[in-house]
Length: 403
Image (tube, rainbow, N blue to C red; front, side):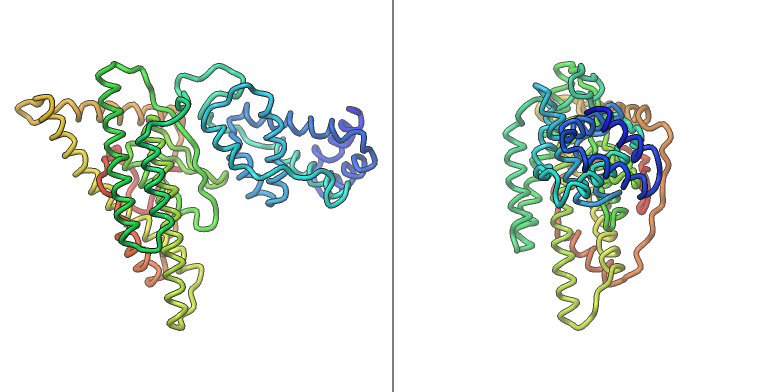
């Protein structure tokens, strides 16, 4: 059945326009015996995506952005089939696969429409750009620069997840504030402990990276929020708006903190925005897209400022605790903690520059709705983070992100 597949692909994938797709789909619709081979060809295209640096979540997200949800489900079906052949996958891959949409039924709503959808998806997969890898391709040796986290997770992270889940679920702002604050306190302590243990054991761990989706709507505000969370956790974020994600570079414990905190703050911010809009509608004022954009921009900017402030206090407190426990310190007041953190900052910066040697600083569009800005600022003030650690110095200013 390969000749039929080759003929259909030649007609549809290497030419522009709907007519080419229709020709290829007609050939496939008339050859039901070629169905399995058609899907195997799609799995080959998925494998090529892994070799170009893509991960499952990245691929589904991009298909959704460029095409639609129907084709995204088809991509998820191919991904599930392609990755099933590997005996072992990195933890982040397993987590991404678990969140993919369910498998799409074949030949629905009809053979021609289904074949047309597949060919349009294949056309997109063939034209995927190569992106910076953040881990090894399945079935190959692990890259020492991007080593995945070990199976399982510390009990501390399980507690943090539970606290953040409760903060997102509660309808009481004061309770959410207390829960989030406690989660961040545990998060900061866990990360500092990891840094100290690595220094004492002369660990050879190096910074790695992960990608986090930053999708429309209001993606610029979301990217600023992620940048603030990353910086506060001694990571660096680089946003690719065209592909719908940011790449975050840092040590594994810090990457986990960024993923957890960003997701939770985005959920809390969206809920706060919805409540603010409801209050505005109740008073007879119609809210618009500019209100929501301004709300999330203010929310991200204000949290960034507050995270930087709490980072300084958390680092100073941890530094004092280290001096007290070990009797370390010099006449200049420098303990064993600060050089450890400074060395990790340098390592993260060097890794980010090696991965992205041509990044630029991009100024995003500002807020234009005063009510949205004020409500977003108030929501950020309620979303207290507790103690935090300071990110690398010299990062982008407010309203700017690395891209």
